[in-house]
Amino acid sequence: MSSSASGQIYTIQDVLGKGKGLVAIKKISKGTRILSEKPIVVITGNKMNIEQLQISIYQQVVALSEHQQQVFLSMKNIYPYKDTAERYLGIVQTNSLPAEADGDKGAIFLEACRINHSCDNNAQKSWNEKIKRHTVHALRDIDEGEEITITYLSPLKNRTTRQKYLQERFGFTCLCHLCSLPLEQNQESDRRLEEIRRLDGVIDQLGTEGILVSPLRTLNYFDQQVRLYKEQGREDVGFAQALVNSAQLAIANSDLARGRIFAERAASVWKTTLGGDSTEAIKHRALAQDPSKYELYGIAMKWKTKVDEAPQGLKPSDFEDWLWRRKRPNQSGQPVDFRSRETFLSFNDLPHENDIDPEFYASVDGFTYRPRRHWLFLAEIVDFGTLLRLQMTIKDVDGMTVPLFFYTEGRGSELEPSLVQKGYTVAILYAEFHAFAFSEPGIRLEEPTNFKIFPLPLDSLLALSDRVQKFSVEMNGTRICHGCAKQAASLKKCAKCSLFWYCNGACQSTGWNEEGHKADCKLLRDADLNRLFFLDWNNFKDHVGFPLNNATAQKGLGCVQATNPLQRVCW
Image (cartoon, rainbow, N blue to C red; front, side, top):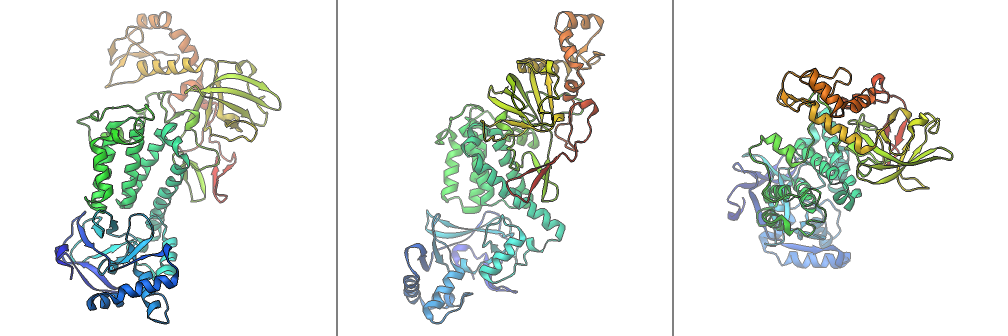
């Protein structure tokens, strides 16, 4: 039976097929500290050879009480032995749990070492450095009669990897709920776990660039991880760390409002998983109270907010959209904003050519990847020239200049020469960051239907988009007249461009002659420019290309080899 300190909430008993285990004798609520235990045998592997380790363990075991020795000797041992010292070592190697937060110190605990494994464990084990005890907390509500389980391995491994590790390391086959899912459900579970791990890799590769240069993209990765953890039903230490990362990213970019909320959520999860007296829970409660104390606060000012500037009165889904800076998809029939950085990317926000960036690509079959959505890169021509092929120097929306090389079949000769002019704007569908061997990083263009030049500067194109947003977007059933600036529900659209609206002929004449619509309308009669405003950017069914008014699926244009030679990105 459990000790009195645990409140009589579990018993140690035989569990079918597992030997001894811990079973709840009443309902245990999520976040409850199930046990808090001191070690009876402690080892530090990296400071001793095998002989020294055996001597240390032997001396500690013989010093135990008779009851403690009986419990120790009843523990499972998967290692063969020839003498008592080897037997004791095998028991420790089979059953030891962490005895420090960081490091390789392990220990034997009379009751915690009885807890069996499950890949979808309902409890979290941890060493609490402040109280020098091993603790176990309920990750979810545990019903009366249900076995209490922890995990013996990384929870982000797929079923095949888990089964192999458990068989090799502990000599058993796991039959938990997660490992027993039907094939289709198991594949979906494995996909989520692999996606979380892959996002970890992408985030690690970004490093400080993810904080300073591409914070929105990095926040999107954390958002994806949090959603995947929730879908997987794992609100554990990995889930808490994703929230910590989000808090640190927000605060580093001076967003104290979001940083506080992320830190509060992280502290809550740390309290559930490790206890309110854990170092992590205490640290992040303090961070939530004053996020400006974070050491990297203010290294960038892109998202500056005050700590109390979180919006009030939003629906939960709308609040989450605000918190994670999610871009809401355009309402059907409403023109897109060319200043949307989720769709119209800067160079630093482009996916890298030979990496499978989960923000941009999704797996079709675990082997082949295709875009999740459409995106467009806009930049202004600064210079151009031709040697073996056409090359340009272009400047993006952030003012960054990068090279553009034409590796099309015609090496750039497909373009109308009159359009290759300094000060004109290039538009490149599905552009990617390319690391040239002979030049600074830039863009390598291979498919001419992904490319278009518009005969105006980038700033002028963005200003045109601003006017479209003001005079074309419908708000609460009304639009603004471009001629008189009045708001009304019964305006008529320009018959030539269909993007500007007027009360009557007089207002249209004013818009045409006095408000610059004559020039705008001429530009917007370019079918490609006009249709860019109404492309369903977030709904990828197949590739599109220029000319958009006659766009067909661009299939079979080749595959981009990813870092993993067994994975391809197909176009």
